[in-house]
Image 1 (cartoon, rainbow, N blue to C red):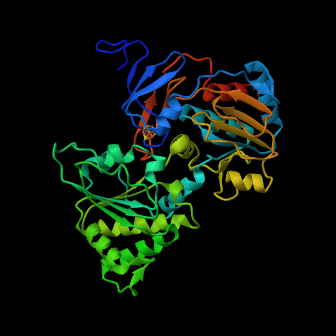
Image 2 (image 1 turned 135 degrees about the horizontal axis):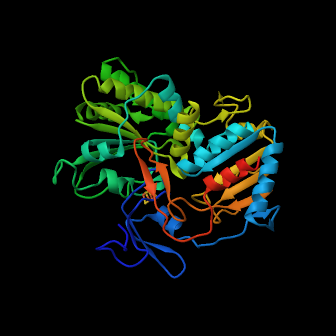
Image 3 (image 1 turned 180 degrees about the vertical axis):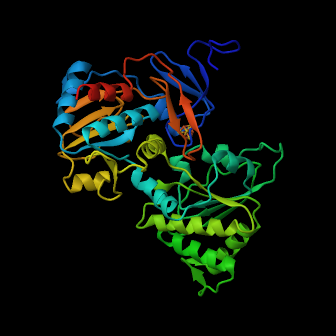
Length: 428
Ligand code: SF4
């Protein structure tokens, strides 16, 4: 409800705002106006404040650093795309309509599509594609879980309100006084500071190294099955601690193992996700347990979802042959650049300046929020609006089950990424 509805507040005062600045998409923010921008009045966090309250600028499009009109920038972008042998549509920090537009122009231009954060997502995709898994949603976890295991992920840093909203909620859908929860931090140096309040029973800290998590999970699966496991330590943790964790998993009425794929930044991390997925499947033979994958910042989940439903593959798809060609290694952004396979990068970053384009000599068309300052002047620069601030939009949440509407919160001349891409495509 905004202020213009009965019972609202002042003009341009918005309640129940969905926040696009990380993948959990909190939808309870209160945003008000200031003289020259927006202010987060309630339910913000460090990331949402940085996003909603950043300085409001509307720079002009540029060609090689010189101000031009939007139509001139679009014409030059179209000329570059048309001339390219293998354009890479990367970054992909945009909303559902933006990704749809990317898929359309990439199809026509014979380009590749890949999201800047898909390396993290592929730690999950490979497991989903090969073995399957049992996963839950934010809502299920919030209302049902009695045990959370945080798997090697500094969730507080990536999703600052996850613990507040999903783990520490005092009430659940089923009770005003739900039972207390146990939270296990299985990993080194994980911020526990926001796990507090009446809902939290026990907090268990098991400082395992990321590279040893797989070994620990495999041993837990074996122990749960009664298979002998040798040694006084398992993955450098005391054996007794690992055995205790197995007992907690077996005794939980609804356990949830939660991870954020970007945090699992060590070699073969997909095998760690696979070990978790297989253990969770086993527990479900006698009890109830699920995985919960977070991540999905910068519109990564929307990009993967739209690409999957339109091409059949979750990103890293080339249309150069006239049909979708899927290759998780060859069409990864880093590999395309390192192997000099792409001769033009079209980089989208409409949410935050953190989605900086790669440093490369390959010519670049940059469609980004004005907050992003590239290290190198792009061939074409077109500032675009942020979905959920300068224009309406739709974005898919990290648990993949909900797409949330994003609202325009202020007047702006900044165009939507989808509209700019459609104009470029029309000019091809
Ligand atoms: S936790 Fe994420 S979605 Fe929630 S307010 Fe912070 S940045 Fe926005």
